[in-house]
Length: 163
Image (cartoon, rainbow, N blue to C red; front, top):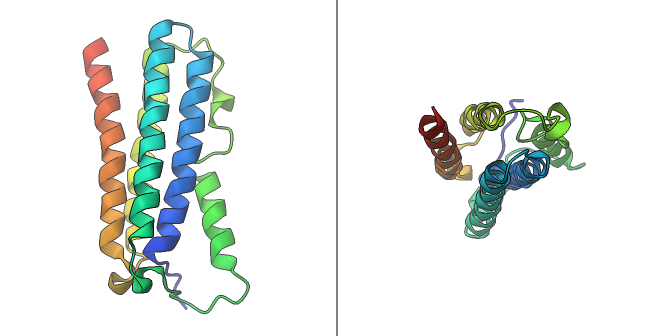
């Protein structure tokens, strides 16, 4: 039987990834060597917080079909699977993504790390989109992807401005 999810499950995972992303940016800010780094990464953490709120709101607005089970799951294993995926996803989804940060990285290096994580997020959600049937809210996953693209735009703009 193929693995499928509904939009509600994907939003649940997206919320966790946003929490992890905010944690990453806050830790990057704490380790930042300049006030500019601290401010930029605090702003990115705030953006992640806003995306979390957007995803929570979007999740609340899902229809019953978009929240309904797509497969028989008496032991709620899909929720455990989604949590594992969210925790293990790229930089943005790791439990402690800043383990790679020492505080000696340049602003550009940390932004590039974050940019790669955000790109991975878009690819991740794009792949998950195919696992959500139309009736279970596939179109809603596109909204998550568009929000993540906003992070990429912000990071690319910063890189352009400092180059």
